[in-house]
Length: 387
Picture (cartoon, rainbow, N blue to C red):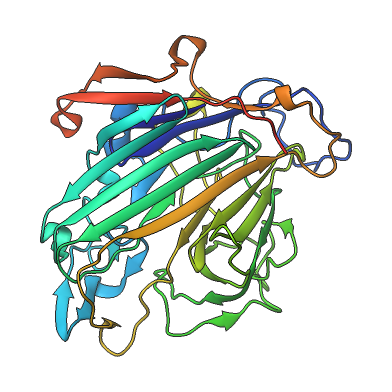
């Protein structure tokens, strides 16, 4: 089951239950504090109280936009004009849509069912400096597999730029760090960045660098001469082909417990991999866990970020955006080394038993005007067998 809240159309919680069966030879750094394998396991980082998100969330589970990722100096060129956006990174650059991007706005629950929910947001012309009013939709579906499908749609009234991203932080072990998790990214090239994580022009091959994830390996690989875990926050250009369903495989992640894996499929040309090295929350998250550096990672399907081309990032002339759709399937499977699981022994779930609601909406009072007049919490559930 997945828990959703209207601020940012946030995926507040995603849990799974697995039988109590673990392979031998687990990594010796696997912490003893992890939850039992047969207990509900949190797969994403988040807070139990929706009221905590406006002040404390680093985009946990949010829908980032109007333009996710970074824009140098908050400026880009469109149709021969320089567009100045709000600057919310170090007071100088634009990140994830600005001071109050889509991930920090109140969305409206449009419709929902037992295993799906649709959210909507209407951005005004000039919001955060962007030209054109923008109509945005976010759709969550729990499908057999089990698969969490996220679809993001947008259209605008004027030429503009749009890059919508689902921004969950994943940890398939339910706790600890992601150092021992194994990651594979279907990419031959990546976008180099500077010390502020802003992109340079062009791309570089991953071969022979710490960015080579073409074969699954532990994430904690070191850069040459670096004693610290490498701080990944880079865009990878996908090399996998588009299938008949319009999706390509972007990445595969498996937990250090070696009992669960996740594949990401998308219709986007790139994926941003952020290893979570800046995570430091002031309040505890789910299960009372204090999140620190590398507590979770993001795999964000998207278009490549705007690079520096002369003084500003230039965008080609364009008409108003009619309709764009960003699709991401997060497919959860058993780890290859595990014995087959009975179909009934894996399901997505969330919340306490008293809040596992099916086809329902729970309204709770908002503590401040940010989520006025109410905070709507939708719990959607699905009992689906694991492939």
